[in-house]
Image 1 (tube, rainbow, N blue to C red):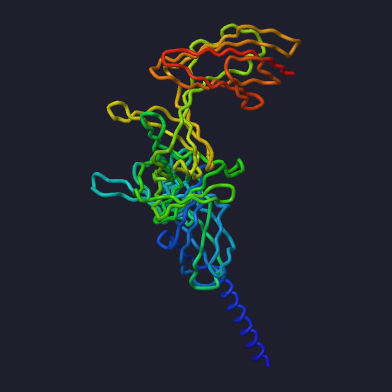
Image 2 (cartoon, helix red, strand yellow; image 1 turned 45 degrees about the horizontal axis):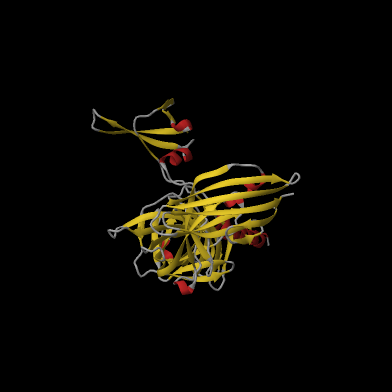
Length: 477
């Protein structure tokens, strides 16, 4: 009876021991690693606010149970809190996520081995070989390692250091590490995340004809990848628009990078997307780290353009007494372009810089000005400021001024426009004015643009001048 009881106790202890072993085994997850070679699909959506969305599909051999997966070749500028992972058909749960960016460097190796044994090596010229010493690394403060060798403390050791191994928490490149619960041995997973320092911008080249009436417009997309990762054969999409982001996610500006140009047949297809516009490249492309890539966005031939000369005034001139307020004032030069299908365009134009060229008499193209444009919907006008006219100038005089109370005045003005060119020019005189106003009389018809602006549109003869006179009453309080 006593023997049977002892046997049962032994069996019970054996069962407990086996259970403890099983629990111990379950507590140690299988370690797996995945790199860019496991990618089956990759797509990148880049925003013109210096960030991008990366979507990867990888096929992984995980096994079943708990798995510690090192997901490598992600962007160094990743925002870990934006990561999403899901498996096709389910069967995969994320228990824990870590982003390890403590990268393997000589200094980091030293820091991780403080208080541990290392091996020091010094070349012995007399023997013609290295002498080796066991040492304890005591400190690496201020970049100067301090060692304990044979009971003595020393620093500035004239040799090299070797280490027993690489600590587990040092990575050769930024890595996502997941603790997963896998229900199937093979998993097809989709991972998405946002990354900083990936941006794009639009640039336009506009070549106008000799009469300033037609032009050829070419749009380029310049993509800059400083995210810290490369993506081969990626599906590339660009989002144009002002996407709201909280201030804590502001990105550092991307620096310039070596440039590559796409093949001429590469093109983007545009579509509306929420309250923005999405441009999709029609074939995969390589988006490499530290690369600046250019792809053609659009081409428009013989688009109609209108040159405008505008002479601007100032609102505050109507509220006080002046004499001659402007002498030889420059007249601004602008090009107006209608973004319509009838004009060979009619697609949403992302914001960017338009650079304008024109051929001289020898046929050589010359740069004549540039201006930035904002996001421009289709069927809207694009106005490009070219600079100031050289041969068209104007004077402005206040001929009389009279106050009626503390905030009402009546003034008379004379504007003289002079044209020194061999051809006549049309000039728009743009007069901003505040408060309640009335043009009492004028030598030329005026047009009310809005509650605060009126204009005159006049012709100035070749090597001649045109005078505009008008009288206006203004009440501003």
